[in-house]
Length: 120
Ligand code: 5GP
Ligand code: ZN
Image (cartoon, rainbow, N blue to C red; front, side, top):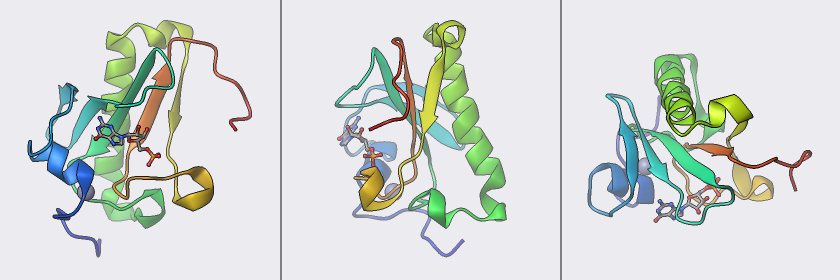
């Protein structure tokens, strides 16, 4: 882990610190889940580690517990919103071609409608 616990210029670090408002659906010791500000599906939330990990590409084995906590938090919200029964997608974007716009790892949870494949 060569990244900082918190990046003072990072949007999601500021949301986690409560400095920028967000609709929080779940808070756990290692992760939070917030509503996406620009939802692309009836359920579209972001599961985010509290620690500033820049992207999936920065993960190391030392992050295994944190990553599992992030996915578990997304799964909990999937159950709570009822989309576990109908299906959902977990997405991590890395870099320009994938459209990553916030450099703090986050897992998109999308569901509530049929999702096209392959994604655009
Ligand atoms: P990315 O494109 O990096 O994979 O995903 C970033 C996501 O963060 C986008 O879906 C975008 O709509 C969302 N987002 C950007 N700014 C904010 C914000 O200020 N609050 C919330 N809740 N979501 C945001
Ligand atoms: Zn951050």
